[in-house]
Image (cartoon, rainbow, N blue to C red):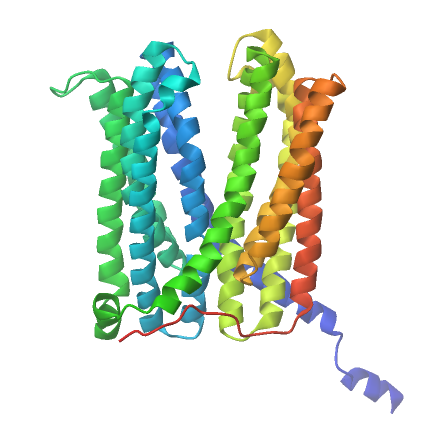
Length: 472
């Protein structure tokens, strides 16, 4: 009898839990793959511009670098503001409210358009102040013209981003990625025409790269808009919600009160790295060059956890929208597992090939040696950087924005940058001190975000703000 009871006893729930974990992790990975691909492709557009402009002159490259550095801070602020949009859409999709999702899209497009125009005007006005940056006259002339074209290309870029996030939230992320692939090819072709002066066009150098960027982003926007209309707006209710939805201020405000802190959050991080570059310039031009090489390597691998961060925000938002808190926890755990695994592997590769990686960028052996030293610090930095961005994405899916923003401010600006200055200039560590300070700040941010995430995941809530409004 006892043997029979043992045979009939239910099996351990642990294998079932592991099976559910791996199933959710696989679903998250499938969603993240096209998003990661899209991030890599978007990042490659600027890399291609730099490679092709490099054949024109050193002055053109310097002007492009100056313009891009000034452009990136307002750019990432807008991306941060738009970041939570996909969470709202995924929540509506989980509740099978496609009409509500279409209404979110209308709001997102309007807000992103107004934000893009406002930033474009601000950058245009700021471009008149470049003369006060004490740069070579030839660099300033080209940088101003290039910055103006970049500033207005932000309008189609932001609208494309909203449509891209809409597709990702509805688990159709491959369409934007395919369009981005063609966008890269179009950008290369247009660069060849406008930079070097082919097919009857005059050689415009760096300005040609600006025109190629503007045209490419506009074509990508138009193509994705057609795809969204043909795939997601086939039903009359969604079309009506998008075209005739009433202006419902609480819905817009829900997006803004989540998006604005998110924009400030990412700007605080990017601003910290921008100021770190300024400190490198205080040390020497060799330090600044080595810093740029290390950042280039680190930012390339960072695209993977960044894509995972976006994907986990969508999956958590979807789980919360469908009232499935256990699945939200599994998504977070799966994302953290994949992030640590990938960034740990990246760290090993960087440790093993630091000198070889640095030597691919420049021939100056002094710069290569210093960059290799920074890359050793970047190897450790990788893991904390991946954890913090995945934590931010997970908390965004839980509509937790303000506290992570405060954590970023404290970690980077109250701890990381002061530590960088102290180590670099007071204790004599130089360029390595700047990166060690950044590492300290990043480690603190990642630990605090993990602690915050643990507290939020303990709550058994299934109802969060949806930014829903009238869809009539």
